[in-house]
Length: 222
Ligand code: TIU
Image (cartoon, rainbow, N blue to C red; front, side, top):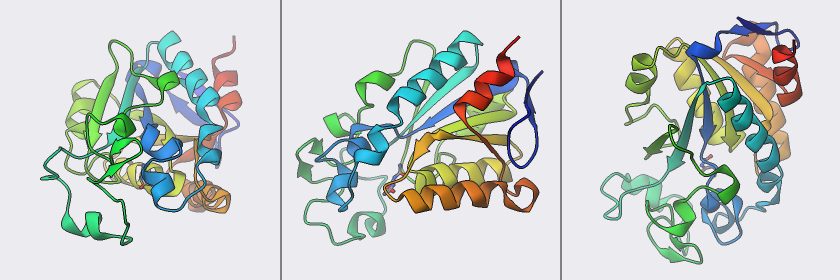
């Protein structure tokens, strides 16, 4: 058993054999200029800064033989899995399904929907396409995790207050014990990132725990 003593609001213990690292939506559409995040009017640079930490988190996961799950927010080319309300939101000139600088926005198989190169999935990783913000909505993630005996999740990715937080809440309601690796997550709005971390750990860890990558790594130190 591994214990992250420095986790907030109190120590987080997990067995790596029953733990998955869930990397949320580290796609070009969110991290690169010209993608969906930029088309929404955001400065994407705060997101790119966490890529090295996410690379380290995945390396740690693989070293300790933890399951790795990459989620991808993307729709099928016919947009049959995209609610019209989602497509209409924001009144974007170039929105979901339209042709943008990174190909059709948030459409599977397009350059923008792909993962940033440094975080490309490796053999044995699970890649989970999802139509919503939460990774459990309209996906088989719960079945996949239960079949693999997973009870604990270490979560990173983007954006902290949208897809990461939604997924943490969905996982928490399903009984998973979740640690947000907070410096492996980012938002277009730094204040929202910080507020989300505080929301997760408040009230005795009402949604889960939070720790830095260094604090997580320290837990594995002999
Ligand atoms: N816009 C925003 O902050 N996020 C998303 O639309 N998707 C994810 O967080 N992945």
